[in-house]
Image: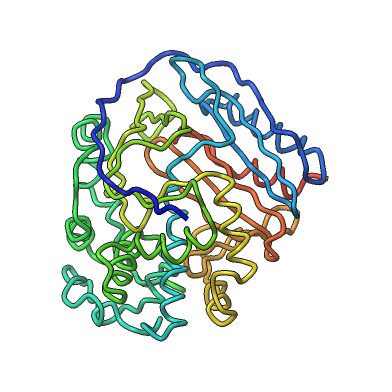
Length: 383
């Protein structure tokens, strides 16, 4: 398969938008899968009615697929969303990173019991952090207690406020610079299983991949080991490419942590600010293919897949966290495996049943108020 081009591009400055969102409209591809997906259609419409600019969703069941969109992909022009949209998948990147780490373990190149210090000497230090006491397994299941750099007030002020984001959205930061935000804080307190979701863990895991393979960039290993074998033509690990591939929709944010106030077009940003915790771009069809292949054992030997699916209690009562993989129990008792992803301007989820036979991937082109939970529940629990 032709390798993805991963080069830096220049982007124009985004414009603050205050126009009212277009009325929800639904378009659906012909259904080839069992069921009429009526509940899923209604949940997608409801997300737009609740204020999300646009939604794209694709379902894969058996050998059939069904896809739909609602709302708009551009609130200035009214252009609808596409079922073929590329979008930033944010923390869904973590499953790809964890998959490569487990492949390396299967090849004998590292052990999940290795300490972070072994691979990244001296990097996890400061304010009580100690890489000699943290294992790779603890990075992948978020039990390391390492502080999340996104929680740092300095990072938030610089990159997550309206003024800060608009000024710094194209900044290039090294992994070490991002880690410095985390190391400026104390580790999370120890309690129970000590699960504390921390994006810093996956910056470190990506750096371990580079050290263990000799690659200049962890994304090269994801390209070679996952994207190319599965022929994920819409999936990439951009380095500093600030634009999205075509087709794609605009991404919107309030940049305020609420659903109030002006709406900003935040489509262009430097994904390197997320690094291994959330740097990737994909499409709903590709995400369904990836998670289905993963759960069916096409990417990992049985021993490593079992380790990936060994979970600890998470911050949500209805889910448990494995190694870059979430086990979510729905209201009807069905379990789905996958991951959520949130980045400025975008919310995504990709899940599949344990046998890989029924998958859903969805993206919301706004980052406020509405989650993807109702859409997932509708697809897997509606009678």
